[in-house]
Image (tube, rainbow, N blue to C red; front, top):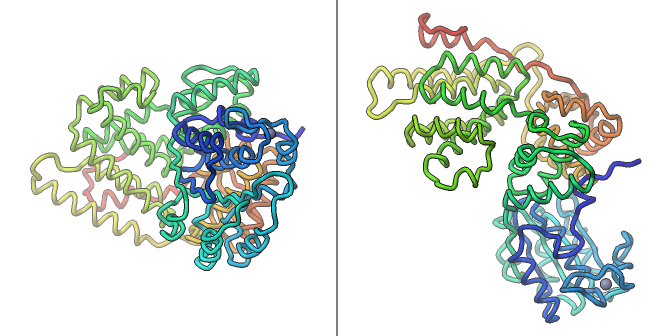
Length: 498
Ligand SMILES: [Zn+2]
């Protein structure tokens, strides 16, 4: 039996099932009820917030013969017709892969033909910001004088990249991040519906990892269902997310904040040995410092963050002990890492340097010894960046590789395999002459990709967008370059590093 992702199976097919976008739904439903329908709509918002789902529902609702409360009835002949994938009245275009002017012209050339079954022809253009300049112009021409029967729904995650000329023609709807509680409710419903067991803590963890995107949350849920074999526990979710025990992370954060470099480096070493990705660790730490700031300053932090009680208590202790300045500085150090990781393969060294910098950050007025230390750290960071790459070390993936990977991700998502995107998002990608090498760190990712169909789907997508075969490696240790001699060199032999 072919596996259908939860996201696909539970895609809403009427407005009542759309979650977290009441402001959008209300307006659209009113338009349907009053028959006051526009020709051009712009749906903006983060991925996975329901733009395409709402566009699909709307495209059927405007054509439905007997809409129910503004939603398509799903029963009339037009609804039946539009449910078929080959229908000519609702056209979905992914601008990420069809962005040339010719492709848009081909589309707009046919726009004057009337719809075959319903009243309207609806064009849903996804990722519309990806259109080339000339394609945008061709689209604009059509938007200026659309035929009576045409409706355009443009969807984008990057509204700032849409030309003002197009924006001004469209009715704009902003899709919001879906609140954690609503995602959690949806997850409980879906798990119950499938006879999957779960703990409340596990559900909240999945919902929070979705970060406001229903699609992301369901992709993670998919992974959890297959990884935890129908009984989803908090620990299982942590493993799927590649997140180590959050309490260990708090201990590391405490070392950093209290200036315990030795303790911090040891903890990082231990996490590295467990196969933890250093870039994930950096963003986990950034999130933790941010959460501590929430706890310190926001009365409803516990509710907003929806953290497990134990973790909440631990954070509270950290927040009470350290100043806002200190927390902010540490958070900044970690978020700055993101950019640097992109251009280097030496993730561990970079992270260690940042952690040392954060741990030794001056408090209040800066004694000269600390200033000296900071200068040394800056110098260290420079030297690390200038480190020669050893022997046959492959080149890190470049910017266009990032683009190609995004296309791989969008292919997989279209096939309903968003969970593979998640599973591989923290894997290390290395582009070689002859292959794209993916090094998997997490148990969950290794397990998912041991399934032949998954491996094949990923392989095909990589082949299509990188033009070379995929090679999967498992749990190769992240480069353990000799940072310690450098540290000793910089700080003197008295530095104790175990
Ligand atoms: Zn209908």
